[in-house]
Every structure is written in C-alpha cells, then in structure tokens.
Image (cartoon, rainbow, N blue to C red; front, side):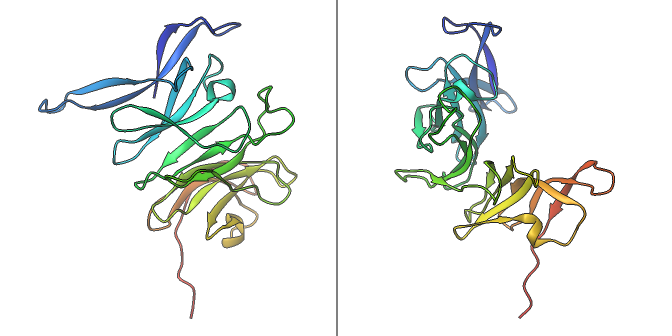
Length: 234
C-alpha cells in the first residue's frame, strides 16, 4: 500500500520519487465511498510502505530513507501504525537494515524478516531471519532457519501463533516451514509428495490450513498448494 509522495532530499542515484504507506477505509455514513489516509514514516524517516492489516485496523510495514521499494535502507524500522495512524517501532533482530513485517494477527502479534547484526548488514546485504514479535514484548523472537540455510522469511501468523514462511540459501533450495510450539519444522517433513517440494508457505488460517507454492519434481513448474492438517491416529 504505497504511493508516490514526490521527490525527497534523500533520494539520490536512480530513484527520483518517494513512496509512503497508505490506508484506505470507509468514510463514516458514506455508503461505498472510501477515504485514503497517508501513514507517516517513523519520526526522522522519509519513506514508508505498508504490508499488512488486521481486523482491528492495525497496519504494519517499513519505514526508512529513500532506497528501493522492497526494503534494505527503506526498511530501517519495522513499524506498527495504530488505528489512528500513529507509528511505533516494532523490535527487530539487532541489525540495521531489512526490518520488514509481513503479517499481523488479531491479537497484534507480528511476523516478518529482519537482519541480525553481522557482516554485510550495514551495507544492506540480505542476511535476514524470520521473526515473531508477540504484542507488547520487549524483544522479537528469532525463528532462525532450517538446517543448512543462511536466510529465512516469515509470511503469515494465525491467532494460535503458528507461523509459516520460507527458508532458503542452502544446498537444499527453498523450503516451506511452519513454526509452532517453539519448533521450526520443514513442511516437507509433514507431507508425502516427493519428488515435489513445498518451496514456500505464504499464509495460514486459524484452522491450520496453509497455502503456498510447490515445485513439481518432474517438470520444475511452480504451482500453488493448499495443505490441510490431518488428525493423528490414536
């Protein structure tokens, strides 16, 4: 939910125009009409972009300085805007760049990805780990990665605080994961579809159903999937 906010003093190089987060919502007593509200960056920043909203009107996104729209220095801060549009910073994993919320549940818990402190982070290298921030907590939880991978991203969280996303960068390629009960699990270990591979989990509902992308093991084609939990036998 971004919009062109005109040229800014910190825009240099190839980027000329700026972007800001926005929220569209119904106008009181106006039927189908909606209004557009710009969501301000975190104090001191010039750029913002929104990534998700919950049923309570809370919005999450990134805030930073003029850079690429998908993150890096434009994601110096992970931000939560309350229903009145006031931004507050969400705790990150300790780095400088790529602090990017991707989903917020009804309780206000947030997931996404964030650079921990490390070589390359101040320069904007992507070394992010998936994170979970429980509403009100002083710190974000590092969900780490699947074995052999340097990078992970969380994309969705449900009301039970089950988190799904992708782990990648290692020899095994991209793999979908689910995090629950303090354990990160390769989603492929819970299904029997080889040689197909669940490469990313994009969303999860309160029933535990997961959607995402699957790679056909024969053709290499990327398709979509829906995975439904099956009750364990007694």
